[in-house]
Image 1 (tube, one colour):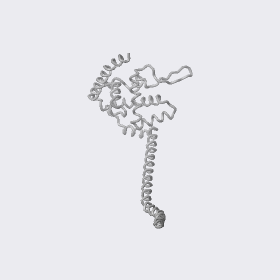
Image 2 (cartoon, helix red, strand yellow; image 1 turned 180 degrees about the vertical axis):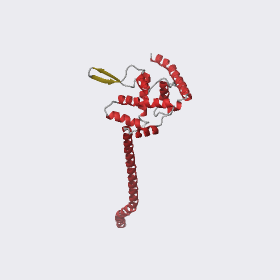
Image 3 (cartoon, one colour; image 1 turned 30 degrees about the vertical axis):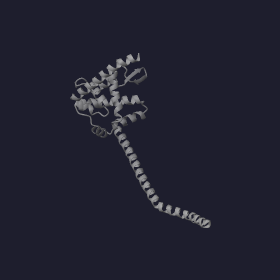
Image 4 (cartoon, one colour; image 1 turned 60 degrees about the horizontal axis):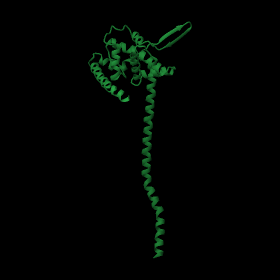
Amino acid sequence: MVQAIVNQLRPLMVSIKELDKQIAELFVKHEDHELFSSFPGAGEVLAPRLLSALGADRDRFESAKEIQQLSGIAPVTERSGKTCWVHHRFACPKFLRQSFYEFAAQSIAQSAWARTYYTRRRERGNGHQAAVRSLAFRWIRIIYRCWQMRVPYSEQTYQQALRRRGSPIAKANTARRSRVLARKNLVSGNDVISTAWRSTLTALSCLMTPCCHAAANRRLKPEASCADDKNRKKS
């Protein structure tokens, strides 16, 4: 039974590789290739998925909010009497939602402000998945703006915009960079001290080596003289 399943999977894997190759070739030739490849963390896998999510028709969506709701990234608010609760959207294209979610998760390690935003969300008590969905919600607005203007994403330009608006993310990101720089300076300072200390120990060992040899010779001389006396008595 296992062998039969394996025999069925082998041609399927070959077909998947062929499809991946065709997707890569078509994506390179697409006019928006550079635009979607510019997003940090998109890579060869997620960039084509983001392109397929938005498509080439700029009139398809009137705002980023439509994409956020269609993909299921936008949360749903429900009310009943005095009760109100918020949860993620269940009725949505799952692969589309997963594409934005996976991209947001990958961007945490590639984008400084995304890392700061995710960290702040976790500090507020959000779980990992909720924090990533919140980050994806923000990324969709950025992707939509770049897509409408046909301009590749620039990390430096976006961070400058955050600083101009006085965003808390920019302030937290600046503080984080300062802490990282301070740690690097501390580590480099410790390395310098360690190098100087090793050099001092090496110099001291070199200076002490002749003294040690002289002391050893002085300790050996009485033993040698005693051996000579014994030899003279025997003779």
